[in-house]
Length: 98
Image 1 (cartoon, rainbow, N blue to C red):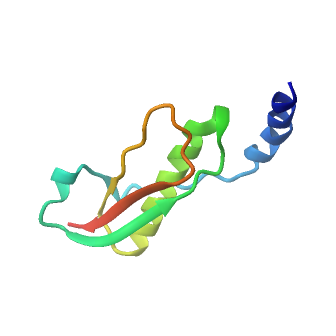
Image 2 (image 1 turned 120 degrees about the horizontal axis):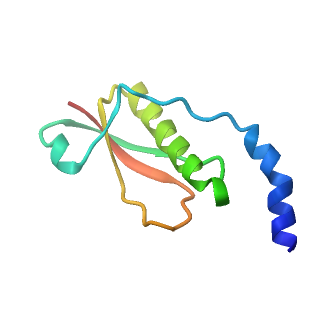
């Protein structure tokens, strides 16, 4: 019961967290899509929300990582796999310029 009360108290704060803007110029890719492209290094994003809002947090973390990739001149990002149902505290991937 206490956990539910804490979650309910934190929910309005999560609503104040601005979502990351979608980065449409950087493509989510698979390893086979970036063969022959220039590896620009690793990128990360951290979700701003968890629990019932985890899907939103994961999407925001991916967009934050893609924004970093864009700033490095990337056109594609290959994200490391995330296990379904697992709590994600950091999204990681590799940025490429193709």
